[in-house]
Image (cartoon, rainbow over all chains, first blue to last red):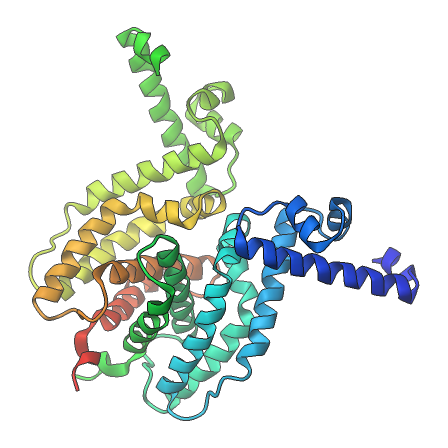
Length: 198
Length: 198
């Protein structure tokens, strides 16, 4: 860090541009092939392997940074989703938009699952998870989502069903077009307070 | 393979005993520490590292074999679960027993997730998945489980919610005692045909 702080503003801006190019390259390569090597990523980014390793000591660090960046970009896009009105309809809209992102990042996610522990991947989703959490809380307050299980559990259920859909597509048992509908139909039933009624 | 076939029956029995000891050791070590090394596993098994590598060329092969063995053992245990009667009650019993196994194997599963792709892990669960699949089919025939989503999807949902519970415990957001109840309450709601009724 000291070394970076001592650099001139121009050098810092250079380093920043180089990092951006590497992350763009990583997202592009890993989205095509989850096993893309550091060399391929460097080539796509238009930098040398040594430059990549200067910013990311190993491939796992680079994959983590690429996933973080993809999630942050997606998170920003999800800000546009209308979460007002009936929480069930709002959840369906959020699943639909989130799913597009998960599906685009399916290959990147496989790359991440290869090198990062599941807890880490869930941690990187903290931003999107907060949005879901607030929506679930509102649905509970309004009586349309169940309150017999904790909100954190329901967030985890949504997260794991989305990722299950990604795995099912990879396994050839589901098409990307079917997925959002399946996820919504499953999650709305799972979140329903119906089971509490006699 | 030719080399093994040429060995005397006594030597083959020796090799088999050695493999059994290594797998027992691997399950024991990885269940305590998902990052257990091949050296630790060899020590626990009472064999040398070279012997381990003679049977399992790398750590990922060994972890895969250990998970396969743990799943096979668990599968045999699950044969004892009574799956007759109301499919919802049968599913609750199956979740309860399966969860005990998943929970015991939580650390082993983390080890496997570190070295094996998700598709491979799901593939190793094919035996247990068949049992769940038959039960879900019966529930659909009897009108207590939904038929608007494919059975394979519902199997995947159960699988992912179980593994989500394991991750939630690892993250400290859930206790092992709560998990089976949460999984059952979530899955029975998710599988309910209620949403189809007007």
